[in-house]
Image 1 (cartoon, one colour):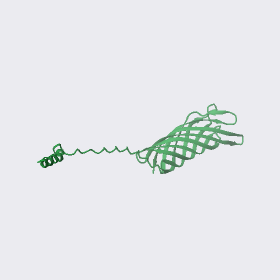
Image 2 (cartoon, helix red, strand yellow):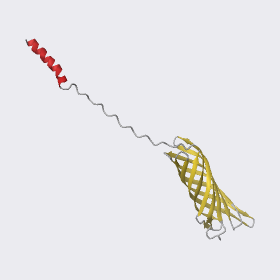
Image 3 (cartoon, helix red, strand yellow):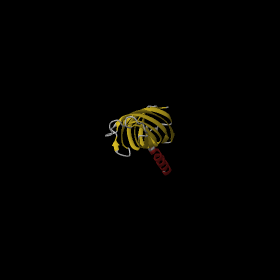
Length: 209
């Protein structure tokens, strides 16, 4: 009899979990949320062209007096080529601007800056669809002196700017460039050295290919 009681007790012990709803399943830990994907970096590689419009300022030393330029306007175009390695973008650019109203204050009204030509190298950093860059290069300016003389000045330039891509090809930007130029007015009856600083800040619109 005692054997039957022990056997029944053992069966009851094994059956108890079934009547209590069975073993409790332990839920897995939730998977960690995926980190947001980094913003895609635009590929700036290849040629590009565009138009620019800005304002000019600066001064000119003609060996006798230092004159300031009246604030002028500069309208022109540019073309260049970029190479990209990771986020680093580098390349070369050629730009031409026709300058208006950059007359030397106090020089009689017939002395002015007429045009600018810039050849420069650029290196920058791509962040999303923006390109922040610095530039260094060679610049040349054409002047009118005494109403008839047309001396040229040339020298170095330094620049900073940012371009922002719109869609896949069009971009807009802003650029600041400072130029230190020098030359000589070669008129036999009126020869003198010229040193001039020309600063410009302008808006750019362009297309990349």
